[in-house]
Image 1 (tube, one colour):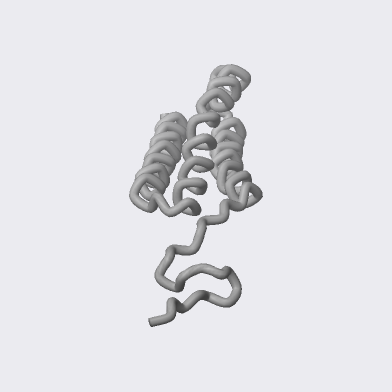
Image 2 (image 1 turned 135 degrees about the vertical axis):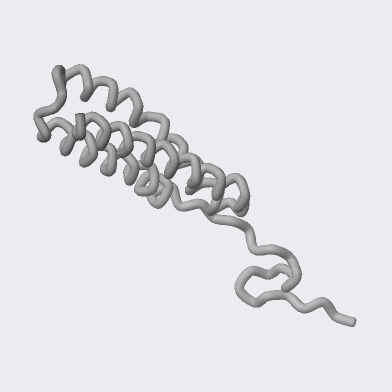
Length: 110
């Protein structure tokens, strides 16, 4: 029985398609938490409740590195077929952003 091959790729139909990773998409996904953190920090600074907004901004900048790396890693994992790990990293980013939001709300309420 002859083996069938996919005409575009020259491989067997039953073989999995090789994963291609878009680094542009990974970068965009890594910058999304940064944008959210900037907005959350801007709202906190504009509220006038912070004693030292400069130090809060510095700490926020240090904190922003972790969700960015996790979001970039999640995008890479999801694109490369590692769905479970990618979803776990997405949940971790969500938890980190929710914790930051809760902290800022707590600071604004007094």
